[in-house]
Amino acid sequence: MASTDTTTADQPRALLSVEDAARALSIGRTTMFGLIKSGAIASVQIGRLRRIPSAAIAEFTARLTAEQPAA
Image (cartoon, rainbow, N blue to C red; front, side, top):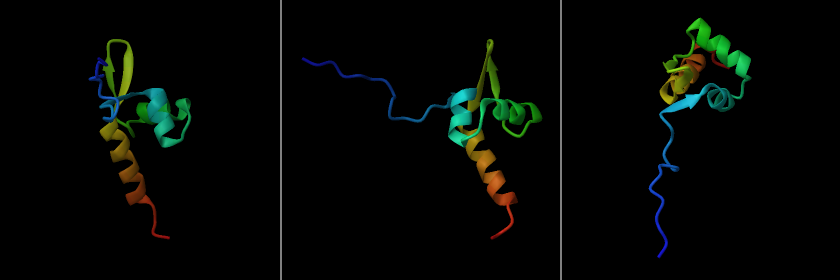
């Protein structure tokens, strides 16, 4: 009998590492840290780890899109 895996692999993660968030935006790690430091992207600290809420990525991209002039 095969056991079923109950992990949430098909669900999006609520918090992303800085590297994963940078990858999601197709930018570098250093640029991501700059955006965090400037307050352009929200982040939380859990112990010594810095994490980016997935909603912050969506908000940032929506804000960038809204600020762009119409082509």
